[in-house]
Amino acid sequence: MNGEVGELEEQLARRDQETNELERSLSTAQQILRDNQAQRSLEMDCQEAQKRQLGEKAEGDETLREHFEEMERRSREEITVVLCEQITEKDQKLTEMIQQLTVTEKREEDLKTQIKNVEEQLRENENLRTNLRDVEQRLTQKEAQEENLRLSLEQMEQRMREELTQKETRETELRKQLREREEQAVECQRHLSGMEQQLSEKNHQNETLLKQLREMEQRSREVTAENEMRENEFRKQIRERKQELREMAHQLIEKEQQKKDLRTHTEQRLREEMIEETTRLGKQLREKDQHLANARTQVEKQELLRTDPQHQLEVIVAENANLRQQVVNFENHTGSQPDDWVISRDNIQLTDKSLGVGGWGEVFEGRYCGCSVAVKRIHEAINSPHNQSLFQREINIASRCRHPCLLQFIGATYDEEIPLFVTELMESNLRELLDQRPLSREEIIVISLDVARALNYLHQKKPPIFHRDVSSGNVLLWRQANQWRGKVSDYGSAKFEEQFMSIGPGCFAYSAPEVQIRAKHTAKIDVYSFGVLLCEMCIQIFPDYENRELQITQMTDQVLQDLVRRCVRYDPTERPDMTDIISTLEEFSKTL
Image 1 (cartoon, rainbow, N blue to C red):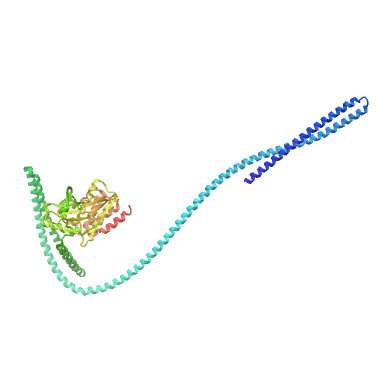
Image 2: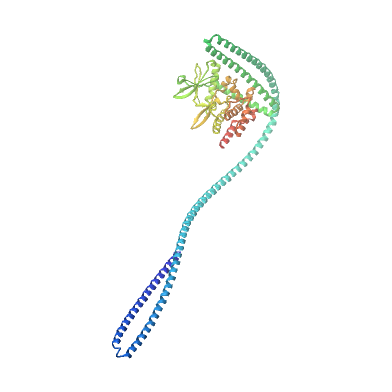
């Protein structure tokens, strides 16, 4: 396009040059015409001079005059002819030059129009170049993106090849393990054949044991009958004691009316007597219930042994081992000294700030070794030698329990005065938090996992420890960053506290059915209480035994509702253990 514009400009320059040459030719022709006119004027002047000479000689030579006239005429005609021809030629040339000039001007106009068109085309070309640069820039970006995608694709292919290699390696390992398991299965079959042979050899021995078991069964029936009689007598005594308590309460009201100035002292004394009497009767009742449960268990075992000789032999061996372990544990408990957990009373500074009052004592805030601690002090009314020994035994249990989700036991006093039980100081408890506001799903999962891990730790101890008093009041809270975390308390003295709290409505609301019917207790009683606690955390309502199913239906999360239903099943064997509960909660936490 630039070349065409240059050629057009050169043609326009040549046309201008031709126009200038035509103008110069025209000027030359005009100059020649003026010269001819001047020559003609000179010739006319010469003729006039000649005329004057001839006029002077007119008289002398008429022939010469005529000659001169003829010559003048001819000269004029020739000059006129020549001038006309020259003028005609000049006019023709001028006309041609004018036509050429007109054509040149028309071509000039065409060239100007072409130049405008060329300029417009140039502007369009410039716009096209701008668009072309934008397209090239976008194309460069697309190429960069394609390069990045190609690199990402190569990386993904590399990762997929690595994962495929890992899966192939794992598949090889699994095949190897499968072969090992098959070899183990073959070995087990051989071992089972040997055991069957040994079983046939021991069948003869079992017949002798069956005779002994029948005798033991007869004695067990007699013991059961005797225990039932004693149980009826103890229940009758309890009813009489309750009647006495009601009469004492009536007497207390009368004394209040009569002696207002001694009202506080009398109430305290009667309360202490009631606690002591209730404690003694509860202990006796539980001992009898335990004897009865043991007798029933023995009867069940004997029934099972009578129908299954091989199982009978295994149970006898297990019972012997358990008896030996109980003897060892009893000797350890009676022979060991509580040196590990003993704290000098002088090192404990009690304050007047009360953190709570329970059925067996009161908790104060205190100081120990420069740190704030919680100090439990037993009521003076229950500070008997027997309760002192129970308290020391439970302290021994607490001193051997160490877990991040258990309330940290620091120590206790061991002297003639009222015992002091020292633990770490917590910020609040779950019951207080539920009274203030509902919990978020994250808080429910975190706190319930802490409680489950603590109970699982207690259940895994040898021998297992059953808490038996899982409730929102016994889940203490502390802050980790901006998150509430839970710790289970009263795990070391649960059995001791149960003497005073099992008759209250709070413990009954969390208790498993087998606790109410005095059946044999297992770790599943804590699983039941944990399910009730989890329901309470979700709906923010204190448990109600009569409306248990209604409260469970108020739970909005289906996973947690299903877990609670499994925990509170009537049959303890159908409830999950704490390990299964922890797995379920951990899987559920991954969905949050």
